[in-house]
Image (cartoon, rainbow, N blue to C red; front, side, top):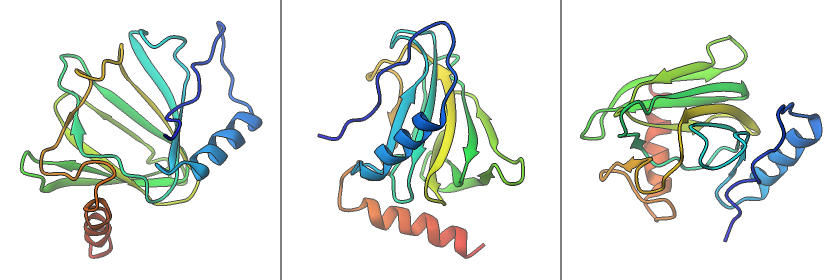
Length: 169
């Protein structure tokens, strides 16, 4: 089974180094999931979850929402780019954002109960994500029933349809 994340960092101060960036990128390249998380919150029960996500094109972030009261989420693209999608309850794309560090249009913040996902556009994309904790697998996310499960044979077709939608704009 693929490693999903690095160990949480420790200490009162965290400063990312070039070595950690290189390790994160390399781990995401080697991962069958094409992504790796570096949790920078000091413990899993932390009330605010802060993560650096190293991402490769082809990774699949299954459409989901965060149902808990106060479960807002913020994404900042540090390097690279991605297409961020907001869906209605039936799976129709109702908004699309191109997030990249190259233009400064690199931040998206959303409130709870928003169906969302994204497609990575460039190799070695790095994002900073923060949201309400503590992480609880049963309460954190509700996956969209209209979306394929991670690892299923329908994932590539789903990603291709999102990419085609973007190309046809």
